[in-house]
Length: 234
Image (cartoon, rainbow, N blue to C red):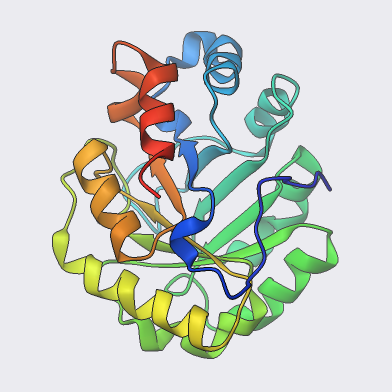
């Protein structure tokens, strides 16, 4: 497994002093030149590559699978943050691990019991992530916070790129941050959906440490400057 040198462990320092990580979502990339797009992101200072995997069942869209992840993995050395928006994600963990995922995140709503899947991800040498939809309460994931490395808070309903940020999720981010800090957990809090320079700052102020964003980054005139500016949100 690749080690993310930017990963910070809990200390008495406020979370806001941690380095904010930027994870561009390749869902907004030009897939006809995906390799070049990924290299451009890395050269511009992206910390992670966010990969949205959709199965057409859990969400009403279909994107990519392990084969594409494996080919994309050849184009970059930075961590691949793979977000499984699929039913019964436990069926696909080995395939995505072998393809080169570094973080594998599954939805609390997508399987009856997430514990075995989270244990399996870690047994494969990968970081385990858990995510929840905008209308799912933090209490649903709270029992599993000690078993994960990343909590992904969806700030749109998953399935399509280009949606607007749902501001009501900010209270959930604060709740997650309070829980992580109170329990001294080494858990990143990522936010995905409608993230731009305004909403990204709001998410960081609420307690997020990772920002996943698509169109706001891919469509900006100066990607390197934009990522550098977002890093300053901390």
